[in-house]
Length: 441
Image (tube, rainbow, N blue to C red; front, side, top):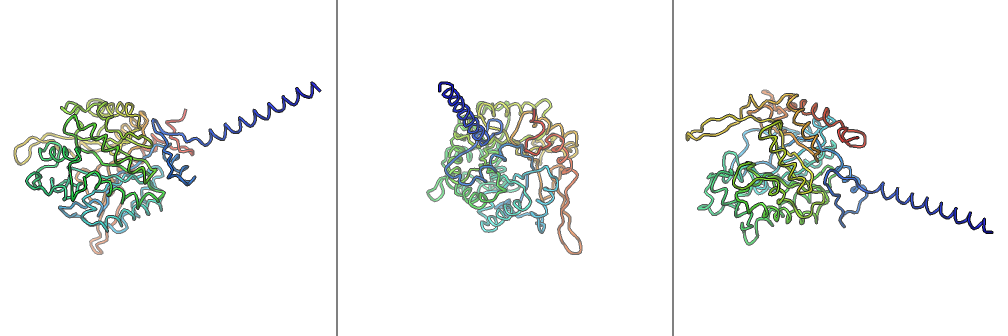
């Protein structure tokens, strides 16, 4: 009897041990594994196991992409495009991009003032982008873009905020600035970060949130949607604005989280002047981070080979900011740029892009992408894929030609798209499990 009791206890111990091991393996196999610093977002809005699995897959690979511009979604309020929009632009574009079998996403820029100009055409185009991306298995980051603040302040090149933020014409004279160096731009952005822009009783932050909600309501149900960028490259004009941007990003991220579990991206500021009075350092950049860091990514731009000098210092700056903030990095724009000193019509010294020196070779692209790979990043996107031609050839990955007889527009990827494809394949060879070879050990 005593011997039987010992045997029974032994058998019971084995049963308990097996049960414990089985349960532990099940739990471990169902824990999402995240990218560097990233945290998987789990909210009450997650009801589909398929959605959860897709999010885990999205967060555990390096996203290799290109930037893309649209038509109505990037139409300024104060000027028209001079170039026709090719037929089947999105179908042809996503099809050509998908053929590379390495480019997995596009960073799709749109402008708030473009929505205000023609909201129905804008939203239809957003829907077309999402559906076509679904069709070809390409992910999309929806980028709320601005350049030189608005076409109201910079009629020739600016695009971004709607005209109703500039109705005080004495304060915001038309075509009076928009760049970080202009006095009127400093005034406008200071008011924006103080949330002092009021239109018909509603503050600007809430108005922008309402606009972004429209984008989310259309795109979030699509499997192609990867994430949303709150605002690309906002301007900073004083040291006290770093924390205010953090408050703004927190507000936007918290409110968007009520609608989406997808990645939320916040952007670096401009200017990135490492010797400026606004103290562009890692600690201040980290102050821009939303308080809720779940599935949040920090985007910055780099236009050059980060081997030494400014580009290298800039890359190190964002690495440090990423560590302090505890969020992964997204190089949302990258290319090669060389500027030369010249003078404008007013005799003022300016720096302009030299289209010859800015050319990018396969070796250049590999060097840049290799640096990005080595620091461990969430993703990167080359600038850019656009139906609008650029004087700097490597600034466009596609050529658009018109048939002189039929007038039909056709598109063809340029040599630069092949260079980018080769760089991505060589530096980020994806394994069957979605993990780049460079990250396997």
